[in-house]
Amino acid sequence: LAHRKVVPALFHLWVGNLLPERFALVCFGRRPFSDQEIRTALRASLDKHARITPVDEERWATFAARITYHQGGFDEPAAYTSLSTKLAAIDTESGTDGNRLYYLATPASSFPEIVRSLGAAGLDHETADGGWRRIVIEKPFGRDLDTAVKLNREVGKVFRESQVYRIDHYLGKETVRNILIFRFGNLIFEPIWHRRYIDHIQITVAETIGVEGRGAFYEETGALRDILQNHLLQLLTLVAMEPPATLDAEALRDEKVKVLRAVRLLSTDTVDEHVVRGQYSAGNVQGQAVNGYNQETGVNPNSSTETFVALRTEIANWRWAGVPFYIRTGKRLASREGYIEINFHPTPHAIFQAPAGGVNKLVIHLQPKDGLELHLFAEGQHKRIKTGNQTSTNLSSVHLDLDFDKRFGSERVGAYERLLLDVLDGRLNLFVRSDEQEEAWRWVEPILQHWATDTQGPRHYAAGTWGPSASSAMIARDGFCWSEEN
Ligand code: BG6
Image 1 (cartoon, rainbow, N blue to C red):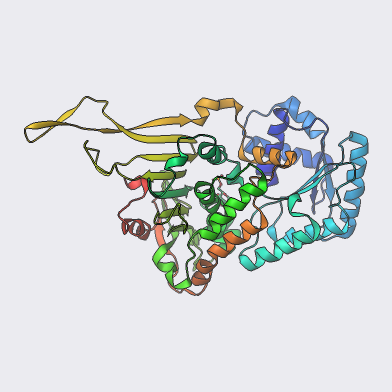
Image 2: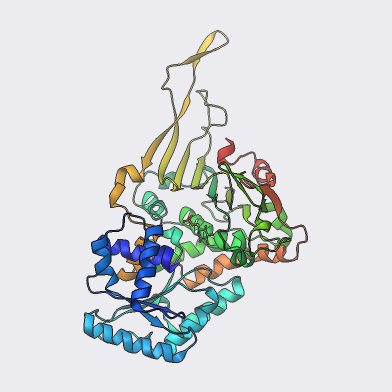
């Protein structure tokens, strides 16, 4: 994570002059590295993972000069005492003002001991002259409700909630941040953002990649914990929340928690009706033959871990009563796509002939392209068809297209960069509060429980398809189809 995401993001911020001139990066780890060795290793990672290449060598030299390495075990008190001394020395020598951001880019199993050790060494203490201490915690944040509650309790013993930044990188994606702006910074959508106009909503995060050598990790995780519990439920809350009174982090997160509490909770005996779990078998993804999940390194050949989940839910409140939400994610699917599709009702009285199956929809694309598409009907082709002895207008589906890359191009910054800037600026809005995290776990808990005892296991789908046919059947029961089947 440090090599792929965090350090490249910091470097881009540095290149864009968005980091303070006086900053230092201290890498903490178990392995013995000299300062020079860690710089060389991080430089090599930039070649692979930097968003902007080639790497600007001049800027790298100034950035690298600020990187040092501190060796120590995560549970080794002496390592934290010496870290404290080192940080104090850096403050004095480099004039770094005493603000500290601790980023836990570590295995989740180490989070509690790191937090405890930071506390024991007094590294959580903010200073009287305003030096802040903030901690960024990555996912997985627990593996079920019980472990998430325990972890929150451990973190809470050392850090105040306002110092804790639980990061979900989906909240840093440009179009995801913009959901709030589209909805609450413009007048036109909000009056129709309602069950009276909206028919159903689809949220999809489809990946073509498999488990990328992380078989052992994925065996313990699965798609529900890896993506649905966090990224997808976060997208759902942003789409469904009520307008907050202010942009204040608490006001915003209060509204998100209310949505999570209103998402209809499944019981263990209704899971099979509303949730489809799948696992990819060997197939062909975009022209390349790939192995099945249970042939991946580190995976049990009889594994029942899901690599795909699709589910139907509703939100039990006035705004959304009766509007189905269909959510899905999967690995080794036909194409990489992330989108939220808001489907509107058909017109109440049709005087034009709309294309079969056509409705107005707003599509928020998260990736690979990001932007906004508003699908409307228009008569552009001047084509008329005969109906009996009359002619009638034949409509075409067209869309208004806001492409973020074309519109904002080089001004844009990546998701991790945005979120790191938020941490540095002390903006908690788009970080997950402890109760929000727990509500999301509470919601997935019956599914986890049901699957833990269910002997049926996941349904298999060939890599390179859109998942098990049961996923299409689930949405078809309500008379709809997934976007790509349209
Ligand atoms: C991570 C998951 O949180 O998100 C990965 O652990 C997944 O399994 C990744 O591949 C997807 O992120 P993105 O930004 O590429 O959609």
